[in-house]
Image (cartoon, rainbow, N blue to C red):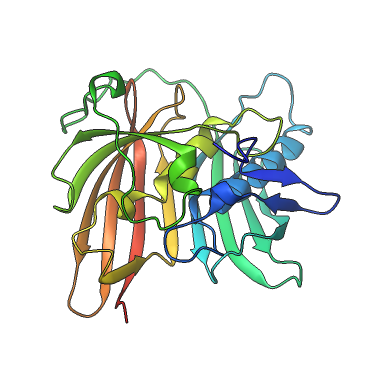
Amino acid sequence: MTEASAFYTPLAQGFAAGLHTRGPWSPGHQHAGPPAALLARAIENAFEDALENASPAEAPMQVLRITFEILRPVPIAALQVQTEALHAGRKLQVIEATLSDESCKPLIRARAVAVRSSKINAPAVPDPFAAPASPENCPPHEFGFFTEDVGYHTAMEMRHARGALGGGHVAMWMRMRIPLVVGEDPTPLQRVVIAADSGNGISPVLDPARYTFINPDLSVYLHRPLTGKWVCLDAQTIVQHAGVGLADTRLYDMHGPIGRSDQSLIIQARN
């Protein structure tokens, strides 16, 4: 693989996007997964800054929900990230982050809600859905509708867990082949977010050669952090005649369910 060091390289001001951020719809634009993960990284750093004022005995903050509003296509170019603490309580924090281009035009806005975790004595509630097979027992898979040789599709390893491809309901294991940022080990949240934006990509019901199904948003809910490097997306896409849809995804790691993600879809016929 070429240019395989990371999705992003730090600059004096911001980050330079590499070719492995490239998405399926345009060779000059990124898949939304990497920039969403970059915003998650900035939000995590903001939470860590807030923790400096906490006592050593206090538990760390745990992200419960992070929502991304994808305002414009993200170019494969230099990017800037800014964060703002909307609420910085000791038990609840809300952080907003914005990804902008070099002209300071906002591209993606993200908002995360985190709480201070605590241990309780409560009975475990089993997952009512069947867990996917482990990635070691699943065949390799590659996205079939990317047009370039290098992109997000070559930077993510995939294993097909279940479901008929093209049938609208598919489970797929995914893990990063390269770091998000040069020299850094991705955090569990970053690993989840960079994969979660692929729910619509693994469970399409429409032919990508005839239609685009781009998501203007992504919401990720987590009831526990990811363990390990693999995240499984058990995704189902629903399409309506009005040109809108929904990709609804259950998220798993090797030990069971960890949360859920959802994407609204804008569906258009290709010219």
